[in-house]
Image 1 (cartoon, rainbow, N blue to C red):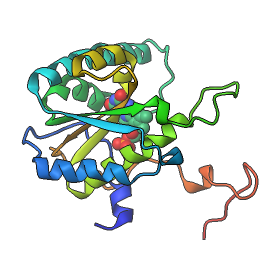
Image 2: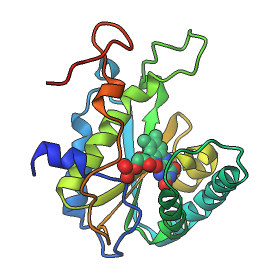
Image 3: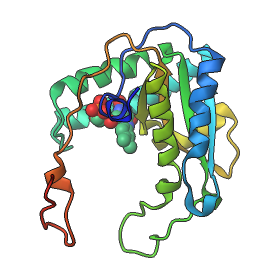
Image 4: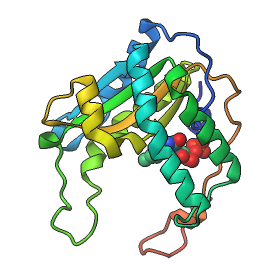
Amino acid sequence: MKFDELIRTNGTCRYYETTEVSNDVLARVLDASRWAPSGGNRQPLSLIAVRDQALKTQLQALYQPIWNEFLNGIYAGEKQYKARPKLLIDADHFAKHIDQIPVLLIVCARLADVQPTDVALDRLSIVGGASIYPAVQNILLKAREEGLGTALTTLLCAVEPAVKSLLGIPADISTAAMVTIGWPSKPFPRSLTRRPLSEIAFIDHYGSKFDEP
Ligand SMILES: Cc1cc2nc3c(=O)[nH]c(=O)nc-3n(C[C@H](O)[C@H](O)[C@H](O)COP(=O)(O)O)c2cc1C
């Protein structure tokens, strides 16, 4: 598969077949994570592929109330929400059916091994995540190449202590995401809704137009 097609059709998958994902395929997908960069090459990432039905049921039970609260916040106008309504319908279906997705991948990070260079600034630190999410993107792309659908989610991080206790995650390891993995029951999107390059790329100074060839 050509790289351009891969990145342009790798939408968030919220509808899955229940058909299992073999260990062979899963291993190839997880292996892709190892090749991502990390600050100082400290490689803080670890992964738990949850297949056990009882555990998946409990993860869904943890996810659902956070999603409900998020959704209610949108309907009550407390949260600004720009995305199209279909996304909410899809995400609601997804929340209710997470336990039926073949693999729930819990992405973990040893925070002692991330190198956030922006913690002294008077704003939210974002650099720590830069040692983790490139590896997650490798997983999403490799899965797409294998024909698997994925959804990168972070809502469960809000209840990290419960997730850690459920999965026996050590005290010095944190959760960074849950990536759902399975065979999609709907076709991959032909293109994704994204801001144009003209809005996000500048030359020399912020706001100075980058001329696309
Ligand atoms: C950091 C991050 C967190 C996200 N968390 C969730 C989540 O908790 N639940 C969910 O359904 N989707 C989640 N998403 C998926 C986004 O909603 C999705 O990437 C976005 O709507 C674009 O969708 P598309 O890639 O299908 O075009 C998350 C995506 C990112 C990058």
